[in-house]
Image (cartoon, rainbow, N blue to C red):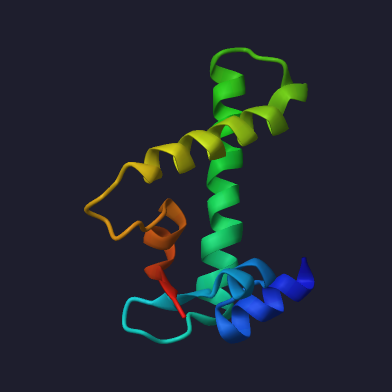
Amino acid sequence: MTAQWIMMSKTGQSFGKRIMKIKVINLDGRNPGFVGTVLIREILFHTIISTFSYLLIKIFNLNENSTEQICNYLITFVCFLMLFRTEANCRTFQDYLAKTIVIKK
């Protein structure tokens, strides 16, 4: 994971993005760096999903052992919803949080 974070911070590309010939940039065209690509796009996104999952478990009195499963369902649901957004240049929730966009390189 650390190697991915370093690559994303320096070039805006992970191993997978490099293979797919895409990269993450700021809306103004610059490299978002560590804060934009790792802290906001990845860690903040997963923190929001985890917090929302925890709240769902508490509100609906669900089994706390299912937190990871609920997180996975929420991430899948959010990603599924983003597939159908045509007016947003295919930007994901993470892109909106970090003010980034993924482009073809």
